[in-house]
Image 1 (tube, rainbow, N blue to C red):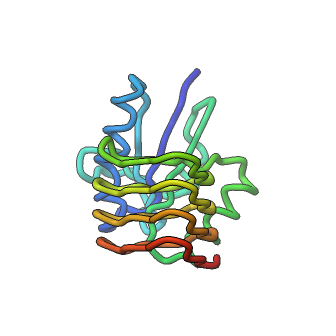
Image 2 (image 1 turned 90 degrees about the horizontal axis):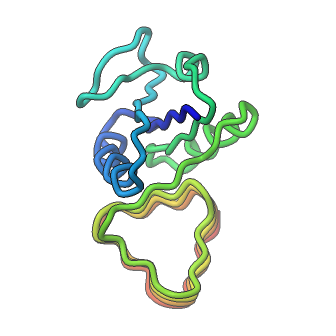
Image 3 (image 1 turned 45 degrees about the vertical axis):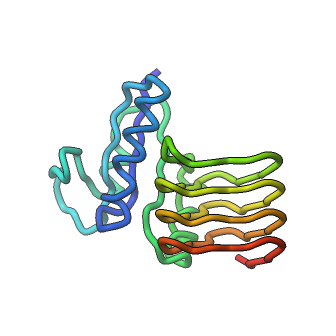
Length: 164
C-alpha cells in the first residue's frame, strides 16, 4: 500500500514540524514520503529537501492512503482546512517528537502536533488538531477543546478548561 504524508504549511511552523514528522516515520520504520503543501505554489518545488506542492496537486498525487498534519498556528485557519480534508477524504495526521512525555489516562484527538520537550501529564482530555510547541506542558485534569495552539513554553497547570 502506497502512503503519502504531508505537512500543510511551509512557513516557520511547517518547517519546524517536518523534522518531527521525519523522526516519527523513522521510529515507525515507515519509508513513506512526506511532502509540504503550500497553496501559494503553482508548480512542484523543493523546500528543505522535500517536494512541495499546492493542495490541488497533492490531491492528484497517486497513493492508497494520504494523511496531513496542518502546521498552521492560526486555529481558525486550521479548522477551515480540517473541514476541507473531511470533505475530500483526507486523514488528519498526528505527530509527536521522540522526547514527548505522555502520562496515564490522557486522551488526545486526531491531528495533534507535539513538538520536542512537550509534556502531557495524567488525566487530560484534548480536542483535535492541538499544537503544543517546544517546552510546553499540560498538567493534570485539564480539558482543551479543538484547534488549540500553545506557543513555546506554555504552562497549562491542573484543572484548566480551554474551549475550542
